[in-house]
Image 1 (cartoon, helix red, strand yellow):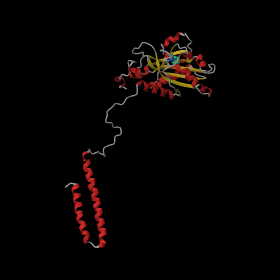
Image 2 (cartoon, helix red, strand yellow; image 1 turned 90 degrees about the horizontal axis):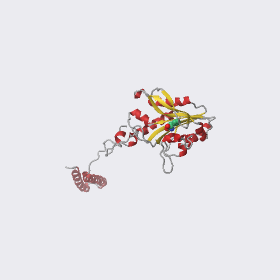
Image 3 (spheres, protein in one colour; image 1 turned 45 degrees about the vertical axis):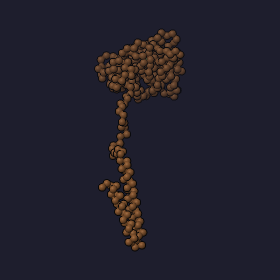
Image 4 (tube, protein in one colour; image 1 turned 180 degrees about the vertical axis):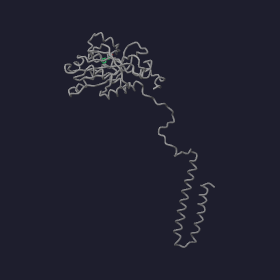
Length: 313
Ligand code: PHE
């Protein structure tokens, strides 16, 4: 007999109890009647419940004891990853920030003044051609190096000097050059610029700062050397090289970028008195660092959006 059937039978039998009422003393009738009524109501309720259960029996039961998985999805998908260049830019910024540098962003569209004039390239200066700049129809320039941010950094943090502090800023950023593209040359790449100004800034501080950065980045002591360079915005100007880190096989020299003491004209244009203050600046490519670190042989992979490449990171 099913649950429902036995309940119904019980209800039927309860009906017989009502006949007993007549046989009872008047004083006992009330209590007995109430007891039967209560029992009847209970049975009716249980019967209704059983009937409802049967009706919904067609639905699949939910297992409430199953483990609760908030991250479970019925759709399978793969998580994306941070682009290797973004990851490296964040690491580079973190190292400089730990060294006490402010980090500011560069921009992807700039102008003649920030690209050339503010950096002591007078109009018609032959070194302007060396930067293979793109130009929009309106005459704007996608920056060919992060040095376009020097004037902005100097004017923005000039107040530090008035307060007796230094200017210490790095600018990671995307840069663009109109040159032939091959495995080691890309029209779009990344640089990180460093700018430091104080009353006593010196060339040895410049070399020590940059050496310190590369040693932290590669996690080992490094030999460095410099070669003469030329930039209108630094005097003297140097090319900075490190001896290949042991972690990368350690043989030969790697050119890491340009640097030098900020030209007095550049300080003057930014409203800083070159008689009182001295500065140094350095700037180098980020793509190179990442290529060396991961053994990437073709710079063009970075901008390619190729999934086979990106999935390796
Ligand atoms: N902007 C220079 C370049 O891209 C490098 C540089 C930066 C040189 C700062 C001197 C000072 O070639």
